[in-house]
Amino acid sequence: MKSQSSFDSLVISLDNEERRSLLERIRSADSAADDPMDLRPAQQDEETTVDLTAKYNSESIFLKIWLYLKSVFTGVPKQNLYNDLLINKKARFVGRNYPELFDASHNVLMNSFYESIRNLRLAADYFKQPIAAYEDDPGASFVTIGSFLIPDIYEEIDAEASPYSVPFTREVTNELRLSLIRKLEDCLQSMPQEKRNRLYFAVRNLEWLRQFINLPFEKLLAHFNSFSQSGYACPVDAVSGELAQFAKVFSVITPVSPEVMGSLYLLAKGGHENGASGEEITIDSFREKCNVQFGMIKSFTQSIPLRALATIAFNSATWVPEKPAGVENWFVKFKNEWRKIFDKQWECWLIDRKKEILKQKFLAYFDIDGIPLFPVRPWTTVWTGIPCGKEYTLGFLYLFFSTLYPQMVSGFRTIVIDGDFVLKENSIAFTDVCNEFTTEEIALSAIKTKLSANGEWAVAFANITGGGIQTIQAQTRMDALMLSIETEVGVISSKFGQNCRLLLKLLDGILRLNQQNKDSFDTLTNLSRIKGKDNAQFQKDLTNSREIIGYTLEVLKGVEEIDNSAGVSVKQ
Image 1 (cartoon, rainbow, N blue to C red):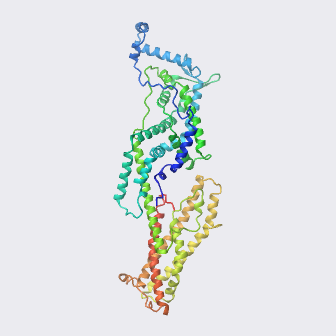
Image 2: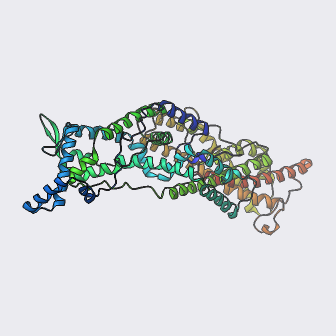
């Protein structure tokens, strides 16, 4: 009965085994001692504040006397002199240890720094597609990460709170829906702290990458001027603001977990399948390219003294980078996304429940197993298959005219030819209904011809998909074609429903089943004499036809309800 699990509502659907396999492939390739996903430098600066007074007090007495005397003769406060001393010392240190990056004598960033930023920008560009998906819907991304980290919680939700844990025979009430929502809340709120911490750590990974790709690379590079001999250079104080932003992001770096790598892959794959161009993304190629980018980032963190350069740029020995913004509201977004998933599942479950009930009616009324489909449906083989908004309506109309109507048409023709209606307007109406059914049958046959090989619509399908690529232009043409098909089916269905309702009233009048409507729909004066000795069988067949028309209206309403829910993904 369970046709959809919780995972089906994630950004990209994978089953548990596929997720485990994906993680194992990531871990096996990145288990070396020099882990490319560990972006941290060998030594991280843990100092978050600088107490200049305490630092001054720890200096030698000779330095203090020298600063005091210089302050007296220059009029510059000794704190400022001490700050300048520390900055000059740091500048000489950076210039001595990173001569290709920084010219301490002129306080200028050199070409090597420029090239490092350019390479770092390439790494950032690679992650733009998956991070764009994260920015568009953070909650969905958090749920995707969770599917790797806490699959047992998801399985618990699927078993306890999914609408698909409820039998289709259960009565649909608001209390049923609310009880499932409460169970969902309980599953999320009762998540062990250890699992919540693991998830938060992964969320921080993703957020760090978001902040990283949004760094002002172009603005920083624009400050550099080209010199023919030494390449590009820039005064360090001209980019103090940009250096501060870089130092802020790189002040807190955590290893990228395999679960985040897997989530990035799914986000990138999702963007590719939603229209991004290029070759197909595989986990192996994605992992390999990611490791190259992570290698660039790690090389940058190990070779560029960002904080020292920013300190020099701001000419402040007490300067420290701001703390990056956190994602403290992540769990709220995580829960909200699960609520969206539940709401979508609830709608799908309602549709699937209607389908199940409809299947039972087809079996009980017409002895048919399952919901019938039209024999020619080229849209199912287009690209990866596209939905038809009149899928079930078209299938039922075909069933009616190919199987059900032939059982009734002989009796109806007998009434048209031999029936003597009490109300002459009923005779006209009955004849018109039979003619309308013939017209609708012909129209349905024309649709089948158009959809069959070499038919008008079949050729259109082939022309649109001839290139093999689902371009925006091809999709637009396909949408227009499907709209034409659905419109024609809709016109037939609407007229068919009207005629069935009128026919039901006429048959009720003929069979004297609705005496309250006698003034509008009456019987035949010769009902008991038509077909002579076969009259009893004629009336029995007519009663059976009336029952079929009644069932037809009931089922038509059901298939139209399902088709009208085309915005919800409903699988056959």
